Amino acid sequence: MTSVTWSFVELVSRFLHRDERDAVLGDLVEAGDTGWQSLFGILGLVIRQKAGLWKSWRPWLAAFGLALPCSLLLMGFSISISRTYQEAIGPTILKATGLTVGPGFSLLLCNVLLLIAWSWTGSFVMGSLSRRTVWVSAVLSFLPCLFCLGRFRIDSLSRFCLLLFLPPAIWGVYQGLRIAQIKLSSAVLLALAITVLTIPAWTSHGPWIPNWALSWPAWYLVATARRPGQAPGPGRDAGPVQRTS
Amino acid sequence: MLGEFEYLLISAAARLGDQAYGAAIREDLQAATGRKCSIGALYTTIDRLETKGLLKTWIGDATPQRGGRAKRMVRVTPKGVQAGKVFYHAVMRVSRGASWVPNRTGSAS
Image 1 (cartoon, rainbow over the protein chains, first blue to last red):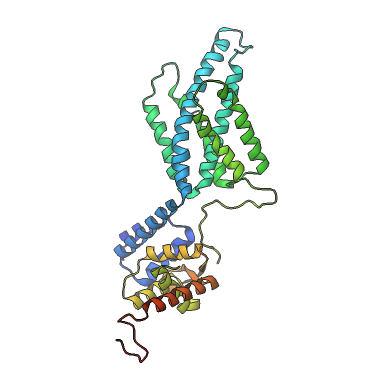
Image 2 (tube, helix red, strand yellow):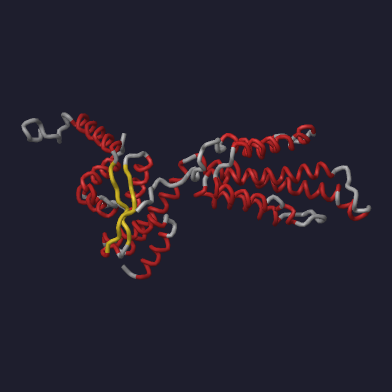
């Protein structure tokens, strides 16, 4: 086996779990396969493993039920908040005393909290639903962002106003990957807070479907929350191999 | 019920006993069937059978002929033994009377 093809084999093997990588490379060495046989063999294994992850409904829900629609909706909401800020707070600070706030302040505060809560819960669920395909979900979140950033045409706003939702979303994904479940009491509190914060939207005549599209992850967290006495578990798509030596 | 390749893999692992690991199972399968067994098919099937609780795997010792790399050892669980038996008896029953099956006197009809 040439060192060049073996380098490719080792490169592709990096997509495997560390223990499995060792076992597979060892098997290839022991079997005496040629460089190309080893390369195609390990490529086949990696492709089968990655494709196998998509047999479950979880990665599909995370990618196409959460990442893609939520990033679009949250970008719109980020712009809406920026406009509310301009109308309610901006003039007050710039033209008036700076110590008083306009009548839209409570709505702005409510919307900011809602943006943080929606971004965090959506991305937490995205990360916890399918941690091994989270990079696909992340790409599907960023594609609409890049598209909208390139076509942003509001002179009075910076284009980065589109991305106000990103910091809580990144934090949510990180937490979702790390802990996968939250305590039931915290989940209920979060879901109730989000529901209460959306009440002003119910009273307006705006479309209500986006609110539910962004709110269901909070109730999903309640449904899958860690019950009292239940130990924190691994991610929901943790691998089957018992890696004990 | 097991698939054909799953049955072959479980049978090879059961036959090899304590010496059942990736490369040994692959070699055994290739010798028994006369067909190439890809490492992708082997490890994907091992993962699937382990998820079903029919196999148990763990990381074993490293040996010099493997470049000092560890083996992924395989053991058939009692549930796997039962699944193997069910498949074997089903094949025996369904094959009865087929022209290529030897009759009771030992010769193919």
